[in-house]
Image (cartoon, rainbow, N blue to C red; front, top):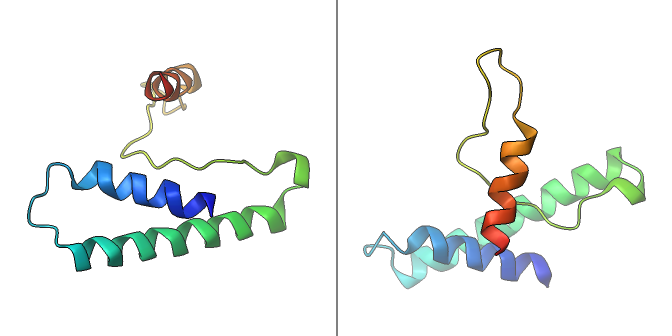
Length: 85
């Protein structure tokens, strides 16, 4: 399952600076993320036509906004491009 692999990667990335995360805690976090991702994907599928449903979801801590409160889409796209390379 692709979502499971992504969820595990996210938890591994988040856990790198957290040595107290146990294997049991890690597995619990993976299951939680898998559930959230599946629920999000189902929610999106119900509301968007199939050509608009994203193939991948990414979590970010904070979205970049300008002084007027508008989302800085170019900055967000650049951040994702940097993560892929």
